[in-house]
Image 1: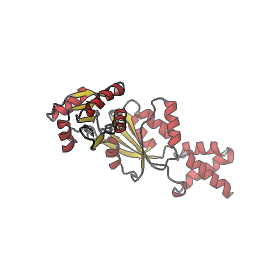
Image 2: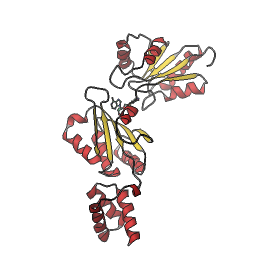
Image 3: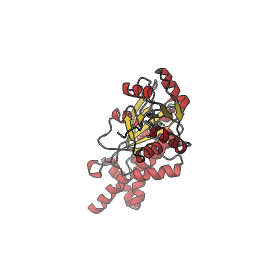
Image 4: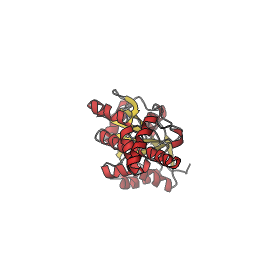
Length: 283
Ligand code: SAM
C-alpha cells in the first residue's frame, strides 16, 4: 500500500432488498471520510437505514471529471474514500469508470467490496449456461442501432446478458424475435429481490406474448438472458421445419427461403440457411 495515501473502496450496495448488503460494506461506508454516490438523495436513504452519516459527494456522468480531481486530492492527502452507485456494483452499467481509472493511473490503491449485481444474480437463477457469458449492458435506445447490435450478436455461442428498463422491454424483445429467431430460449429476471420479483423462461416469441398479455409484467427493471446460438450440428432440425424449408427452396433463392422458413418455424434464420446449404450439397 502506498505510504500516507488513502484507499478508494468500490462498494456494492443492494439492487432492491436493503438487507442485501455485506457486513464489510457497512463497516467500510461507516469508516471512510467521504462516499462518492451517483445520486446522493437516493443513497442517503440506504445510509440512514443503517445509521451511517458519512458525508456524501455526487459523482455522475455529468461531473465525473471535475469530482475525480477533487477526490484524487483527498486520496493524496491520506483520506480513505468509498464509491457507490444507486444499485448493485459501481461501474457495471453505472458511473465510476473515469474515477477508478484515474486513481489506478495515479498509482493509488483501489479495493473492491463485492456484493450484489443484477447480472450475476439473474444468471445464477436462470438455468441457462453460465460457464461462459457475454454481458452487453443496455442495448442502444434507437431501433436501428439496437438491431445492428443484435445482428452482430446473432451467432454468439455464449449466453447473452442485457439490462433493460420498462420503457423498452417489449420493443427490445420484439427486435430479438426478428433477429435472433422466435424459438431462441430466453429468461427474463424482473424486479430481483423486490416484492414483484419474477423470473420467466421460454422462447422469445412466448415471452413477448406473455409480456403483451399482462402489462403489469412490463413494469420495473429487467435482466434479459438469451441462450447463445447453438452450433448447427448440435441441433437436429424438426422434420416438419425441414419440409417447409425444402418446399420454399424449390421456389425461392436460399437466402429468401431461409428467411421465410425462419418466420414460419420460429427457428433462427442462420440455422435455416445453414441447413439449406447442407440440403443443397446433399442433392
Ligand atoms: N450497477 C447495477 C448492477 O450491478 O446490477 C446496474 C445498474 S443499471 C443503471 C440498472 C439496470 O440494472 C436496470 O435497468 C436493470 O436492467 C438492471 N437491474 C438493476 N436492479 C435490478 C433488479 N432488482 N432486477 C432486475 N434488474 C435490475
